[in-house]
Length: 280
Image (cartoon, rainbow, N blue to C red):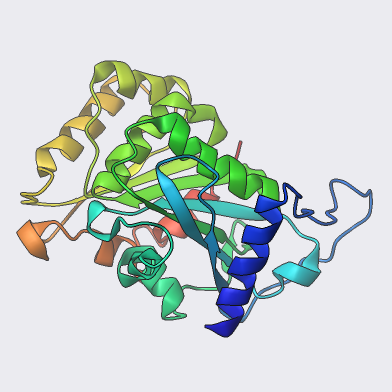
């Protein structure tokens, strides 16, 4: 906890002074080979208190690979958007983000440190903001992603979107606004896009794997089913995947406990391995 608070205070001070955290060396910027590190230890998890992004957010968690500070590598990014049950002020409420879904896996140190896909090893940076209210402006969400890109070494060809419930719905509108910034999108327990917005994602060639429980009452499962059907009717280069899960949780709404479990696989891949198939 002390390390987390020190890091948070350090980043907050730098932001207040308008100084930039150097993204550090990489093989693409200094013309030398950076040795690939195969991570075996859990991600390091930090809180970043930052109310300077916009009025929607006061802070976020960032999880970086164990050797991040010394590796010089750039890493794929998962941008995770939480549900409204854990909204808060981004400071004293920030801990709530870690109580469910992907953030909980990182807190419990059970999120795999390394993924082997198509002959390559990958480790993720994961950004998990806490919004004060529903982020109905996709540009406000993108501002969080841009801030993370500024201060951390991100492989911008491998940025992935996921979220749960209202966070998934909000990321849907982010995906329609900036489809070519992201390499894949995994909406879970919520996606409510009409034909126009769906077409934006299809035309942006953004691969989608959507999850919902069969009888979700909180965000009706028909929303996800209809979205995937509409998406695939537009003849995308990569057809969208749909997974209907057994009912679980409040109002049969919790599809994320299964979908985000690294042990849940289809065709030999969990959602993280599936994402890593794609890049920009």
